[in-house]
Length: 576
Image (cartoon, rainbow, N blue to C red; front, side, top):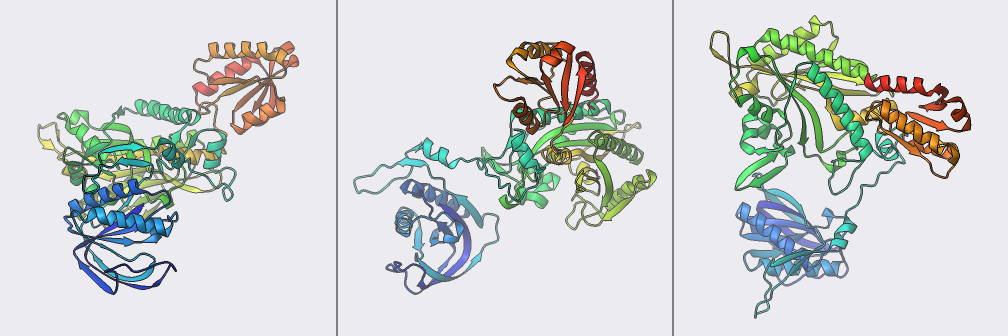
């Protein structure tokens, strides 16, 4: 069952002509109806719904009614909520059953079923006035009947596991309109990740994909350690009060997942910044500690409509490579921005991403902080861009709600432009969180803060990287770095000897073998589908010459074993 609940000032409706030949008006459903102060439940009864679904449906209505303090319920059949509708007979039967159960506690009106209806309603404006819920099937509820035969609600819940399993499906991908280098196709071919309807917009990383993910993380950590960053980790669920302080609640609450715990409202974090503020506040700070660079690979969640989700490019669960840099004055801010720009250039160069253009995004209509602060912040960013002779465009009104930003755009091998890195200057949030440091004169002052990301979203970055390189990742990033193929069974021992030699010379090398009883061409093809960068075939000729037949991203050559090991080790060590 699917339902949309509307807490209204009133609803007016009247049955028109029949939508179903078998439809009949029941007693009391004739003519015009007007109900004041109702909780209207637009309802679609779906295939598989049964009496157990009704009990869950009633339970949800009671929950909503208690929150909005509604005494009147209108059950309003509304087929448009679903494309998997139950038969009319079953739908009417289940709605009658729901009406009977609800009448024990509420004044209930059930609108006609199977008729075109003209209706008018006025929905209230509070946050709970419009709620949608889906009642899952597969739930069986034991019902106790008293002497009068009335039904009492949930006593014990049991679930039909087989029925639920049939409803859990891997999200099917229509590849007919996708290019061959689409990251979703490459993700399947290379066994990197998948998506499932059980967690819309949240990636299931397979072993190969998680290796790729963690290699990017390792590179990120190495470079941040060199640049003097501390790494932290903050909770994913935080009290609503924190988001009210930060300003996210007012500006962003429609995108936040909410939860409750012991009567308190909590939010699944959509951003990492407020957690970083609390880490800063955990101990007194001195000017000697500034600039303080604090980085976090934080997992955030943001509500998105299912229709806009697109593989790794638009997800609900996002891993952001955030950092917050706390500075004492404008000169430190300028130096830190220049340091971030250098790091951005280093990362782009590592992945052969072509730098396209820079945008300076200015104050949005919805913002926090005074105009004077925004004038100062925008001026600082523009000064750094001009000092570093960077060409930039003004992106008017597209800044973050707490400060202006510099956005960096790259162009991939398909000439598609992407916005990845960003630097945001923030005077407002340190003030809201009452952040302080003691200056050299022992006076208490407020730090200035930079927010910045390099990858942006790791999920999105991996999608871009796969399409940019058509899956042909450099050896250091590849889930399988070397695959050894035997020409015939008699060459298997030589292959095993090479594997042992490689593992001894290059610790943690990701090497595997294909000794299947299949043709060499077939085994090479399978390795190329996985985009293995180094495919080695050993036959009688290679054994006798102590050389290797190396296929590197499609290019074939013969190479001595020692030279291959030396070049491979350097390629991985230097992340070439």
